[in-house]
Each structure stands twice: as structure tokens, then as C-alpha cells.
Image (cartoon, rainbow, N blue to C red; front, side, top):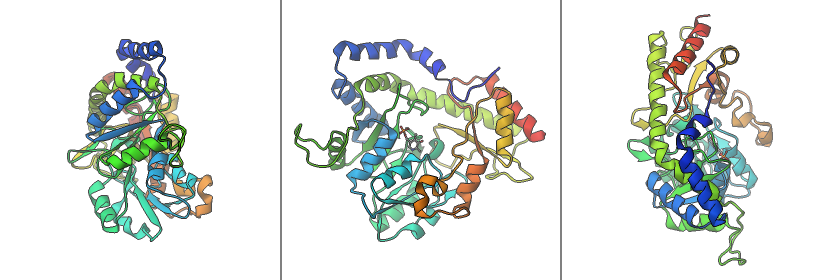
Length: 380
Ligand SMILES: *Cc1c(COP(=O)(O)O)cnc(C)c1O
């Protein structure tokens, strides 16, 4: 039996009629830009996120770019973020002529370590972007305390974390604004590129809507520099058909994670180990107390990660490395002078991490097969 990393067809089959009806609605209306589907999706996304406002946009990347533009980040500014992320987080900073300053991660979560945050702040710092990697929130209490002391706005990169919570508080409600991605592999996936922003700040929501439409208000009279960052009505309608299922899909992902934990523990893996070592060559992802982890990814760590990946590929099991190169070592950011050894936790995570299938429709038989294949490798 082959086990793909993600099976979008299984999910589509379960909601096919609703999605087809949503697409037909938009096609019949021929209303493709803005309009009632986008408005309704924004209201539903705000309700889901427990924020006053939501703004749909063209991608998670553009959500980050729009948030930075709205906060006035530009030439010569610094934005502090995590080196363990998808490149978009830091690249949006670079596109505005600013510089990303990285802070090493907490190995338990692969999220920005607040104990190292203050040392990275300078008079040039304009914002902080914690990334909620794999579907688990960063340590927002500690990050917000520092941000408030320094008077800095926080932009949450919640691209992988829609609906995740810490002590009952939801992703996107901690900072000034939360950025979401509806890339097809995220927990709420569109049929193409799409994204969104959530905020409780009315002025900021208005500013984001201006930026989304070339700064125009009214039409053809631009008040500020923006772009074309709109969410397609077709994508909004598809997302509206999918959003009511999101919590059930999240619960299925959480059940799969719990099953993996039980199976790996039965097989002798110590689930409390944070990083792999000769005594514990395989580790499981750590869930923080008070977290509602939405498991966009379930990430193992192995000191022999590349060989483990190869072993699983040969057995038809899909895996992926999130992410093989930390941001400070990316060629595109070489002018910032990052050096190997600078962020040891992020570098170890890049060398050891391997995501295994966790999608909602994964069956028990598939999960057992994944665990058996991983353990066959570990036992050598
Ligand atoms: C997916 C992702 C993005 C970018 O979202 P897109 O919709 O693909 O542009 C940004 N940050 C993180 C952490 C992501 O996982």
C-alpha cells in the first residue's frame, strides 16, 4: 500500500457536490472580482478566527507583504523573525528594502525562541514576525510582553496555523494582524493560490483593503502604493464550501497525531525526547501545554534523516523536509551576511526534520504501515 504525504482527492470526493455548486454559483453570476462571495467569506473567516475583521487576498505571501506595507516597513528597517520557515516570510521583508534579523528557534516547537528575542532588537526594528510552524503557535505570551515593552507591532505568520490556539486564544488574535495561506496543502486549501489577513484593528483592516486594490479610493484615485492582491470570487466560494468542514478535518489530523504517538511509543520510542541522539535516534513532535495544535505537519527528527527519507520513499511512503535550508543560509539573503553555526537549533532542525503523512483521511492501516516502515529503519 502506498501512503502519499497528502491526498487532496480523498478530501475533494467528500465535498464534491458542495464545491461544484459553489463554482457553478460564481460562474452563473459571472461576478469574478470582489462581490458577495468575497464579502461573505471574509465575514465567515473573521467569525472562525474570532477577530472583528478579515481581508481576503491573493496568497499567504501577499498577506505578509500587505501586512508589512500597512505597518510602513521600508528601506533600512529591520524585521525580526524565525530562520525556520518558508522563504516567503523573510522575502517579503527583503522586497520592501528592509532586512530580516533572525532569532534562533526553540527545538521543542521549531518556533522563535523568545529568550533570544530581545538581543536581536535595535532602534531600526520595525516589527516582529513569529511563525507558527507546522500548526502550533509560537510562545506568544513571552513574545507579546517583549513587543509591548519595545512598542513593536507583531505580525503573525499563521500560514500553517489557521484555528490553532494557545490557552484558548486563536491564531491571528495575538498580534496586530495574522496572515493566513490557503495554498492547497494548508489545512484550509483553495483550488490554487489564496490567502487572508485577520485583525481586530479597524483602521488596519481598512488600510489592508486599500493596499489590496492599488490604494484606490475611490476607483482611479490612488491614496497610497498598493498592488493587485485580491482574492478571486471563485476561490472565496470554494473556501466557503470548505470552511464548515475545517474543524472536523483538524480533529482528524489531531487523532492521526495521537495514533502516531501511541504506535511509536508502543514500538519503544521515547516521545518526550526533543532532539535525536545516539540513545534516542528518533524523536516525535512536541506539543506545548495549552496548545491546540492543528497538525498541518507531523514532523519527526532523525540523525539519519536523508537515509530515513530514502527508506520511506522506496516503500511508497511520501515525506517532505520542512525546511532543508534555514533562512540565514539562503543564497538570496547572502547580502545579510548569515553564517553556518549562527543559529544552531534552526540548523539542526533543517538537518534532522522529516514530515510524515498526517492528512485527515489517512487510515489506521496507513498509519500503521508508516510506523512499521520508520521503525524497521530505526532498528536497522
Ligand atoms: C505557505 C506559507 C507561506 C506562503 O503562503 P503562500 O500562500 O504559499 O504564498 C508563508 N509562510 C509560511 C510559514 C508558509 O507555510
